[in-house]
Amino acid sequence: MPASISEAELSVVKSFLKEKKLEHLRCRQRAGAVIVESGPEDDALGHVRFRKLSAMNWAADEFHHSGRWAPLPIEAPLPDALRAIATDFSWLLEA
Image (tube, rainbow, N blue to C red; front, side, top):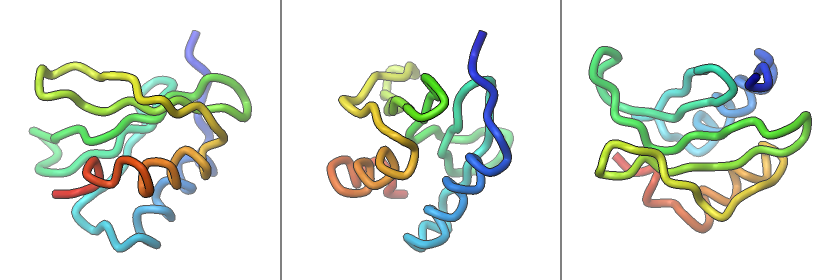
């Protein structure tokens, strides 16, 4: 069973996107993950997904051109995972 995601955890991602001025991106919860996406709501383009592994650790995946999620070498608390994406995989946050 996927770990449930709290509104506070979703707010961490929303605040990160706002702080980094990534207005073209939004996030939503889906099962045990937070998905960062862009484009129209009915035809969204996934950029990165954060999966909750435990109370403290999250894994990150990139949306691959094949239409599947591919794991990234990130497993950390959510704020650290977000910083790692912004630092090491910044192209995933581009339009």
